[in-house]
Length: 211
Image (cartoon, rainbow, N blue to C red; front, top):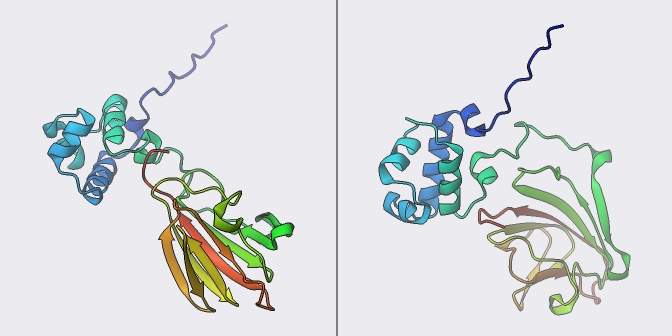
């Protein structure tokens, strides 16, 4: 009896990716980090001629070279090549939203986006009762900080809240929008003297540094 042989395992995932796509991504990430080819060469150990060929899409880097380039950009290999992403469109139905909060603190939330790897941003809706907070005062025992390089944007849909970020207080009213470094100590609160709930949307975009 003849047994069909199994296909050889793919040990070079970069072979499946378009060199032009990889090259454009490497160049964009290098330039956004303010690095020259010489800078990236020194940080990664990959020669300038090889980096130049990769960026122009003239060659597909081996797994080893791609890993060195990723390290030079302070990224994981999966971040550089987007290997942990699955598909261009991800839908989360209303019934599938992740919900949580802390009733003792008067805080409830629902995450509107998918928690699958590679999304690079999370959208959530938060509700605070009067006196409610997303974290303890001064951040003690409060929400964990987001990964280095993360940014957060919050839009106040209803009521007013106070953002406490890195020790500074910012009063935000209905319709206001704020963006800040999410890797700093922070929390939102609805002061006790307010007699109405407050609602806001928050978008956290992932940092591009290695976690």
